[in-house]
Length: 379
Image (cartoon, rainbow, N blue to C red; front, top):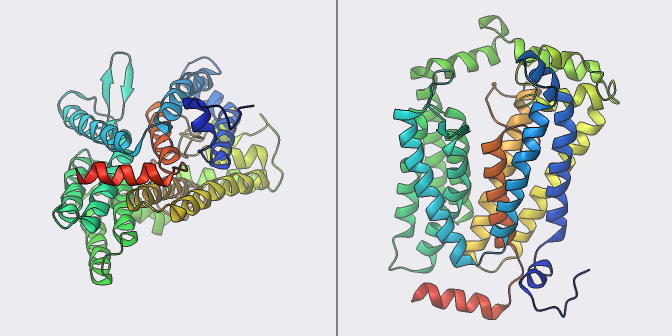
């Protein structure tokens, strides 16, 4: 047990972080390994890999994820912004390099190979984008000599245009919605909020008109007879077979034919083996983390911390909602992982970075430290 009287970096960290938020994230990480033991082996066997290939790799990625999340949560506000700027710049460079040197997977250039490992740079751009946009909005409101709002407006197209060209409509939609949420929380006029809503509808209409894969997914969602709906139909069958209490660990059968059972549709696999009750419990954990994060953000007196924490937890919750809604056929299919539950190295490391930022932003800081932060910014 760490004493409050202990004046060490770890002691200061332990007594200033929100331990309930840490507990919620730890539960998700452990639950992800358990549920991946159900969804991962059938996919590994179909690919000719060892039975627990994906489980072992998830553990391997979980270790560096913790080595990212915990040290990042120690950072000061100034260092959070600096790290976000470095990650954003590096991520955007890698996205552009992926167009030329990245492999084409399912018609998209989203990955870049670093040795034997594949990296999806857009995953790391997301949390860094939120921090930078929050800083721009907060500085624009606090200092009239800084064109923060204009910077925030320019940051959005600079980020989503490369994502559209990949193409990656799901990440584009996620980043845009979170940016609009930050815009709203920053207190800007309703006229602009309504204008952004109209612009978003026009963007979806344009994507439907000019991007065939987007049109196909929307049409399959609205009319099952318009195309192949095998994945969604199979996912829904998992919920029906599992019922409230599930068939038991390892007893699921739908996962053996369900594509992406270890990534996009792990929620459906969980439903068949562990039951709807466990799915609702998992949903409750996500809801707790989101509500806890929003509560901590609301209590924070610093506009930058409040905006950045809100944006990060909004992105986390929205990504979880999109994944679960696709699994229960409440929205068109989209490749979006379930945070800390689905298999995926880039996703796991990116989420660790984002949650590290969140923990650091929501730490309890003495008023003197906050005033010093303001004075450093003015300087």
